[in-house]
Image 1 (cartoon, one colour):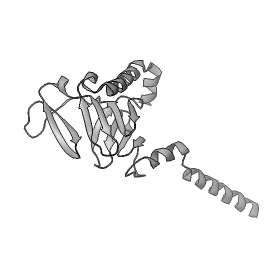
Image 2: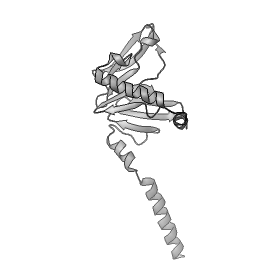
Image 3: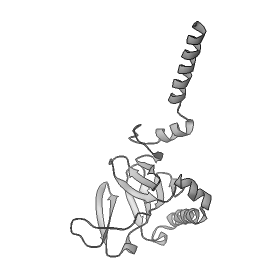
Length: 177
């Protein structure tokens, strides 16, 4: 009988320890994440104030941790962003949306100099898709085309475009699962 109690106790301790184990890769992500909340479901990666989530199979969203519920952008895959120093580069695939508050055209919200800013555009093709987000402040730089950015930033955007174009069918399938 004592042997069975010992076996059950050891088993329970091992199961409990398994659930407390945090893989080193995940611990690295949590350590570099500002305002991390263990309740976040679907977080894949985090840099400073900026997190990448996959809340369901519909795609990936980029959020500002300092502004709960604030969606900065949508990206097509977990491979659709690059981080250099404190800047996150990405290609936003969010469809151009109509404006609220009786503004005409298509609107996008950005953070500039620490303040939220809504900018309206007359044509959906004028809405910026190429974003650089400061991971420490959440401030954004935004461009309609890669060539609108500085030369070093253009190179990074071209790398992202190459990633998007080289994504194989099985990588896309994996992103859907």
